Amino acid sequence: MYSRVFRVILALSLQFFSLPIVAQTTTAQQESKDSVINIIAYFCKNDTLAYDFQHVKMKVVDKDTTVNYYYNSEFQLIVRDSTKQGYKIEMKPISQHVESPEDSLMAQMVEKLANLMGDVPLIFTTDEYGSIQHVENWREVRDFSRKMVKLLTDSLYTLRPELMGVVDRQRFEASLNLQFANEKAILDTYDELRILFGLHGKAYRIGKNEEDLTNPSGYPQHIESVVSYGKTSEDDGFEDDYYVNSLSEIKIPAKDIVNLTTDRMNMMYNHKMTDKDQQELEKAIDEDAKISIIEGYDYFYNGWPCDMEYDKVTDLKNVRNIEIYRLQWTSRHWGVFGGGEVEEQGSTL
Image (cartoon, rainbow, N blue to C red; front, side, top):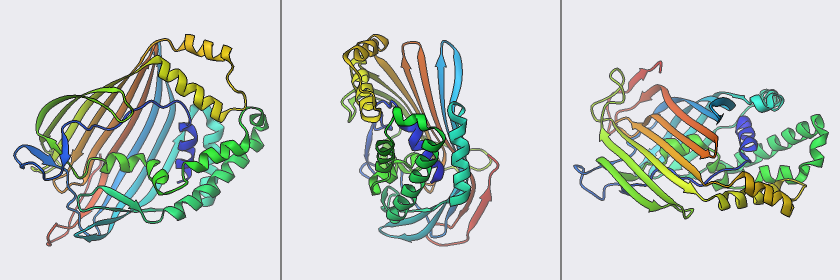
């Protein structure tokens, strides 16, 4: 949780409108098994999987690449209860590390505070398909986060008092606390869970598919996807494993980018943008942005996520922003659905 707060701090910058793939989806089990793949959880009580998670942000300006942010963590998912109605799962942190070349002092400060405060697990529930429904201990997570935010802002403004002239301390702290204000807000900060379980409960048409649609933000989105059965790996996979891959493209008008940037800057900073500032921003952002989203989701036969990737590339004039999310399983301990011996294997992925 400590570095999650830091990640939220760094994420308070320009974000564009995008969502995971939605092409050719239906509710699970609505079509015949021959035409679709249903992504359904067949978990057992005490199932345990460990994952390695990486989140990287890079910027490419005229072929010059800079890594702005790197986050790496290991965690376990443990099924604490399994019923006909769904599952209760604990997300247990193992290790976390964050680097920010643009602000190494902040990274060091977060690591130091983390060693003092420790961390809290997340306990969430899903429906029978594996789609996340609720965070049971969200109040505990919220209270922990507020303490962490206070410590961070106290340290930050003590070390850098000049920030008071740029961003009001109370406004900054309040904006961070809003990210952990309730159950939904907390769940939205867990990119790992969105990627791991975001497709559960859906059915995807087997084969190659294309679709043009308007996404929930109101922008045209073109999606190409490939869905099929296939072993996740020769050594550790199974014949009934399956995957969903896609490429999405979205275009955002330059005017909308300018408006979003202006609103966020006025909300965060003491200095309000003048008409002159607005004109300069419009000159700087005079082309539409193109967003490409590359997604790859590999599942074991029982619905446990195996190897997952979500990449987002934003092109605006001569600047390319790249954001990479990658999750790989590192060890697993399963029960056999419906009863039987426990299966245990490890991986050195």
